[in-house]
Image (cartoon, rainbow, N blue to C red; front, side, top):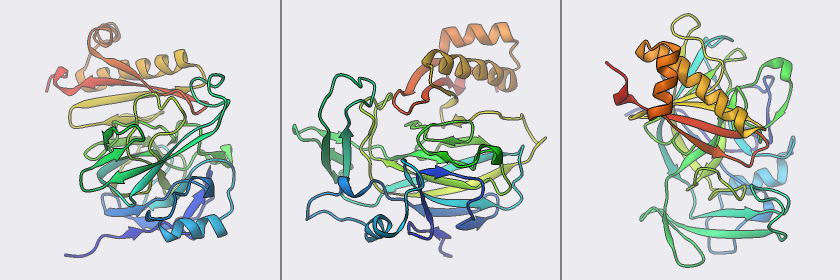
Length: 316
């Protein structure tokens, strides 16, 4: 069997803290070609004590890769042959695996959902049992692991210039949507030639909200297929959407949580028109009766809401 193309995490293949349409591709793939990506997470202050496996490339990145701005270490970009602005990129998440036996969680003063309630910096090193797929928390709880990438995004519109990885926007980025695990797809509007997909911010486990700013942050290995949907081949897309085996997902991100809900709701009404042929009034009613709108995260400057629509409610 031919080995899949692999993009390792390294000084040459990672960018720290930014999305930028001028970044050169670290890998090129054809639409639908399967490949793997390795990611790392965290700066020097979060390294664990001796006895844990620290990917050597993480230490090299700390030593030699400048941080463009505060944010995440991302691997990429991956260019997709033929991708042009106006297309839609479907990111198929085939598999997600842990790359190390530890993660970390940090509480920072003046950050998180309760920025004024916690006044001391706290850093937890969290052991990860890869065979049992659990995290051992300090009070003795074995928390089941559900790894996913907190950050998956394409290049932003070139006119935006270099932007932080922290705020999720129309290009995707720091969505922190735990529904986007193996077997799911993320749909992203393409803004630059090649699409230029990057990922990182590996999470071992996270609750909706990610309220203390961090999840279990860790290094991951992802297997992806990037499928190009050319302009005109389907509905145009202005903002990220998701799909799981059981649900369609719409999303909204904005500093105002009410605005996030409005964005996710409006796109769900559009999606129901596309998938089920429902008029706006019927779609609005079904959203009220059957769609679950959840707080994706409340800590990234731009908060997030995602709507979950069961596929079995849409007539075949």
